[in-house]
Image 1 (cartoon, helix red, strand yellow):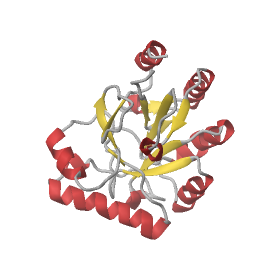
Image 2 (spheres, rainbow, N blue to C red):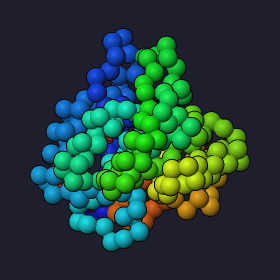
Image 3 (cartoon, one colour):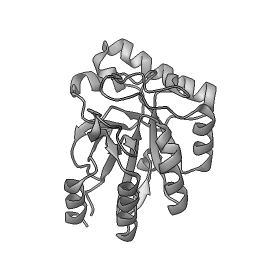
Length: 227
């Protein structure tokens, strides 16, 4: 296990709406609970990006949740508290208390986003570290690089100024087109770990870009193989 750092990336927790065209973004609360139990029984230690500057435990794993959906507060946060484990939640600061306006409502109904009060409560619990998706949740890799970097810097500033939260990482949406040069330019000088949309395994050494594994059978296989 000396060279393996899995990063599991989740988006929406619960049951997908009927006729949804985005069902791959959903994971049931029951399946998430089973996955956490599976990892705990096998001796994994749940880390956050803040732990990447330290010597990591023998079997580290990082949970990343993208979007800041209400289902994180209602379904995920209680599990984190019950098991006394940590995770990272990536939010778009302008959407707090509103809805996921980055999504096409014709693909499925908009989902509610956690409120600032809920964000503060979870952060103060010590179970949830906060990462940024930029200001409004739209894919910053589709923006002009200099403007995209300003977008991210502004989101980091607002989390600190308005919510008293230090941003622990930057995130790119899972399963979105990847532009390595754009990403390198955008993140230059931010001094934050980056959870990327690229799939892959992470060596357990300090790296700027951490690539995700989508939860599922293939991930269970990798976890078993690297046990």
